[in-house]
Length: 450
Image (cartoon, rainbow, N blue to C red):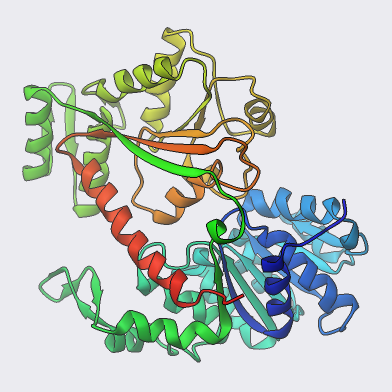
């Protein structure tokens, strides 16, 4: 297929070529893969500035998406590539093959650094936000070899998905600490003040006045940002809530656990040892089931299942993508759909994705953590229902972008949230909106002036 880039794509291609260090903050659907491959192709064969490129990506994207894009476009026909996934032997064989580009999943970065000479002169990190944890093995391993790399490109649509603190590690991978400092402690001290704490233990930080603007200013010389709505005609995005209500007994059980961290049930005892665990337990309870200490599922209510059944019925055959979070969500949704004789599929294979995109099934179940990146699902429908919510803005945004993206033929994409009244569901939605304000501010601050 002939590649005819839009103006914004030409701008991004040229930016990568002229900036050895680049953070490309592109909204989902803007073609970041084809943009990056075109720039790599020019750097390899026109200017001869690079000779061996490593692309680091989520597993599914590394395995499928990058090679599909290389095969798709005529101008990339001379690019040779090797996909470094699978067993250790398969990965080793892939590294031994002669190629221009080597594509590896992020979980194997440490394996690569520990076992092979790192002779890549350009590294592309697809989903830069997956390197936001400076204590993760993948981050530490990449930093060991970072001084050997001439060119680094970071790609993401959500650079500050969980707040500005994430940016330190992401940009250190790119510039080795030149802009935001070499040490996370210095970054925290300069730009943040302690927020939630227990004695000497600090759980969260808040930006100091003016910190956001200064952080954006420091990274602006190596960053460009583009929003899909500015460059392509996107369908209208409509969000709504379907509120469900607990009865007195269900409310009492929820409140008891929230206050005491222990919920005593006839079927077993459920404990929440810390705040993170409590959050998970309360989210489970809001969805209708919890696991006891022996991992047995205990059903508390079916409010969300009833709501989902009503939503499916009112859709009258219109395809629905249903996002779930816990394993028992999947189990209970599957059981209810079977009972109601509603055809559905779990999106966990190429065949299930094909059937969804072909319009063969009315309901598809998706887990954000395993299917948020790299999937094109817009051909199958235009409505997503959040049965269970996630705290992660990145996973939330990426999942919605499976439908709300270029190629969506519907004029409207609907995002519906099933929310249990008076529960942690409301806090999660509020947190997502708050984080999105930070995200939007970051995007606007470094936005490309085309």
